[in-house]
Length: 389
Ligand SMILES: *Cc1c(COP(=O)(O)O)cnc(C)c1O
Ligand SMILES: [Zn+2]
Image (tube, rainbow, N blue to C red; front, side, top):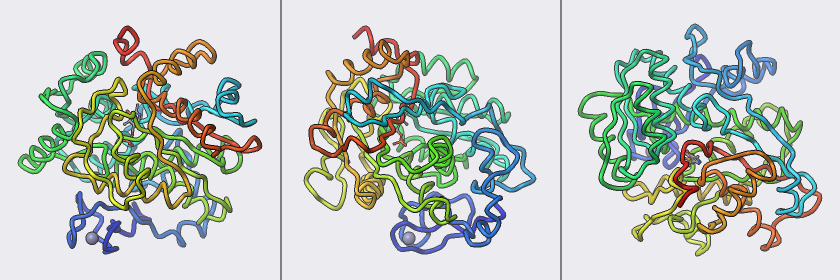
């Protein structure tokens, strides 16, 4: 936090005060934490501090030095070379970044560890979130760890394992008769009415998503350079956008001299960002069709906040990347393949990052000498019904 300059508006560029704020005070667009980079990188050593996992990078997180992090040991996840992925993609260097082994079994532990630590810093009394499941589970566990009450709004169709976990960690749960966007709206209203800190994993909370960029720092350190492609499953897309930001910061620090191409993947049945990419339109439109998919973790129709999707679309284009949709058949097929051939069992939303390789290869986007990383975001054991169906 000593290095935080403010909250930069992604649209009008206004620098907002680094307070509890979800949108620009001038134009209501989403915000991005900006640091005093020059000062920060003058001491390149400061990229690392003495913490573990994501907290090794605490100088680049919006947290003051004297605050103890709310941590469960998140981050520092496996980076594995995969011969099956090599076969699917046709590239020599295909890797998996296995986020499913985080403390609550998804990458959401990165942003939620940061969010609860920031809550402590701001003296927050209660937190809330809307969730497709994994954010809720992580919010429940990290708020238990922080001793902060937590209320979670989730669609009724959320996998039962995820609901049980939230309950076991002691969170208050409200089931919403609708999709994630409906839950988002209700959580947002409740947060404002009751003065709760809203941790919802869209671009709403600028502090929480800072946790996501630690993925980039780890990839760089584990691989030793910048991979050509990084494939990430996207709902609204903060993981993809923040990961790219992390690489830009590495460049700003003079550690790398190129940036990766970002591939964002959605389930075909709910793919507003892919549709905008394919039709080459500049703004994402909400998905009003039936968005039913077994990839519940990324089923976000972006109703009422399509601009979040637009922010992700812009990042994908800026990186020279691609947005890819995969169908339900492929999701099921590759979920089994990764389990049986690599011993890695991930949930349907996560496997889209593997399934996408097939279409990327078909579209001639991959070359043999390139390096590709698929980020598998959440564990399969959190949604067993997806297998039996
Ligand atoms: C949340 C989630 C995503 C998508 O992340 P966003 O940053 O919200 O786009 C992908 N996979 C899984 C398993 C998730 O829980
Ligand atoms: Zn603005």
